[in-house]
Length: 163
Image (cartoon, rainbow, N blue to C red; front, side):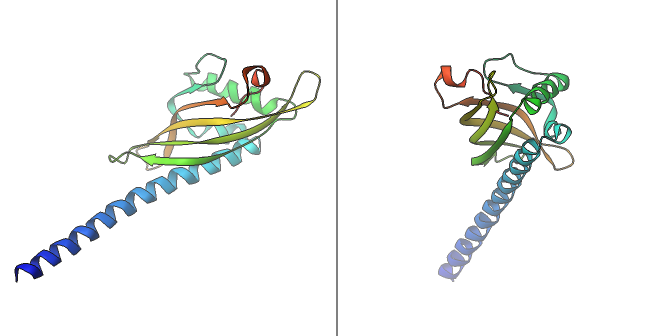
C-alpha cells in the first residue's frame, strides 16, 4: 500500500510539474510571437503599430542617444528611424524567459538593419537587444524597457541604429 501511495504521489507530482512548465512555455511563446509581430510591424514601417508594442510607462534606451521616457519621445525615435532613406530592419528573439509570477518577461535576440549613409550608400548593421515585457491587465504583453547596441566597431556603427 505504501509503495502504491508513493508511486501515485510521484505521478501526481510529475503531472503538476508538467502543467507548470507548460504554462511557462505558453507565456514564453506569447512573448516570442509578440516580438516577431513587432519586428514585422517595424519592417513594414508601420509607425503606429510599432509604437503600440510599448507600455504607457515604457523607457527606450537607444545607443548614443538619451533615454526616451515619454510616448512622444519614443514615437519620435521610431518616426526618425522609419523615415531614414534605405531603412530596413528585422530582429529575432534568441532567448525568452518569463518570471514565475507570470507578469514579467524578457526577450533578447539579434537584429539586422540597413540605412543609407550621408552619401546615399547603404550601410548594414547587426547587433543585439534586450526587451523587458510586462503583462497587462487585459492579458496582453507590452514592452516596458527596450535597448539595443551594435556588434560593429563604434566607428562603423556610429551612423546606424537598431529599432
